[in-house]
Length: 260
Image (cartoon, rainbow, N blue to C red):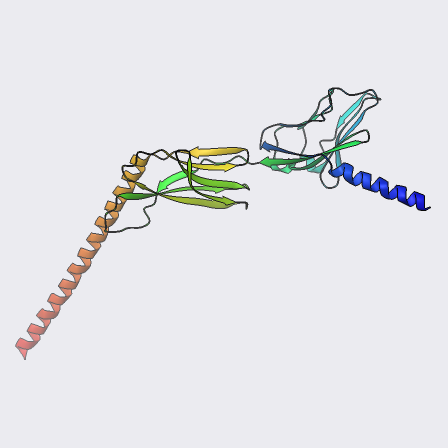
């Protein structure tokens, strides 16, 4: 009985190491296809190949060379794999087409007694960032600088928003949460001739926007001038009202004095 218990423990340990050994990380952009390679050049006559997905090890595809059987079970797991699974009849590799974030997770390949694992990460496509001038602050003092804001609303994880001057990184901000608005400021001179770029990226892709300094800063200057002119007009109006009130008060006082 002791020997049987030891053999059972060894068998369990072998199973644990077989499930975790050789884990490969694979990344793909949402909507693209990805192939999980079996690393076989061709299958043998007695090969049995099983593909499983997720923590529950749901069987999604299998090949039995001995009985000449090939099957995909793409209706499992709410049909997320429907019409998306393809098996290579020669190597047993599995291809997932038109990927979505629902396909991310762990895949396990069993070739007879050999096991391999894959961790698939599916990244959503990134939006192009937007650059505007920051006209929220109105000041009567003139300045040779204008403030640019690069922003993006993202619904993906593990993204970074950065400002570059040429190839040099000026500033950046990274987030790992979903559904968040990112923004990053940059102060430039109105006559700046340098090349700037705002980049939104994740580990496998990026979106870049280059600001037109002349056009954006002119817009900022026009808004600044309009804002300041409006402020000056308000100040003049308030001053005129105060003068009018003071004049009326003097007239009333004079009339009362005359009657007295």
